[in-house]
Image 1 (cartoon, one colour):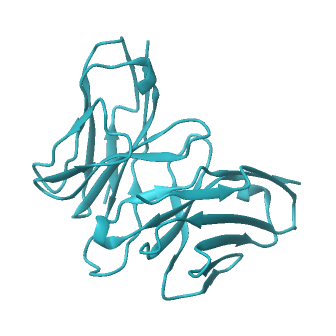
Image 2 (image 1 turned 90 degrees about the horizontal axis):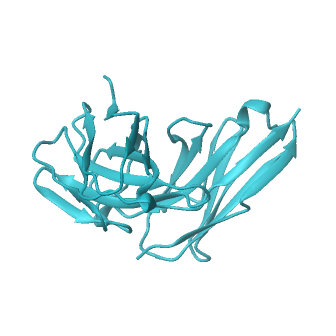
Length: 116
Length: 113
């Protein structure tokens, strides 16, 4: 199993450009999410999904869109990049099979995005 | 929504000493509390987790304790080694809320040889 795969690893955008960060998992996990990590801020939830066709906003959703057409893929779209979106982005997935308890989240290797 | 506070933000210990990191959470409904270790430039990886029906869990040199009444949980690392140097994050989640994790701000641990 490859686990959670993110592409690209590095990206530089100009202000106003749009792009899509890709995330794919091969563990048949129901839950997927996107976090951004800024220095000293920990990881903050952008958007998450509990299954194909179902998405919801997290703590910092503005400027980002997501969709979940398949169980495996959960792309994150930046609509019009701004310098404030310079960050490291992590995608994560976890199993939803336990009816009551949370389960381990597996993270992708991250995408380092710089907006100039 | 859930809020998780983590202290200290930095921690320097001598090799062989113990390290303790504390977290508090706000939502009494949260029932799953993982701890992640992140080495420089790498992805976060789970090192230990605890469910709300358990007060303590150990795995070799690391342990986690949970006090549901006070809404706080702690990570204990004994006999620290240089390879324990990393950033550690606590988190809280509730399965009914989509298993989304709310993270603390992180603790940078430096183990001095």
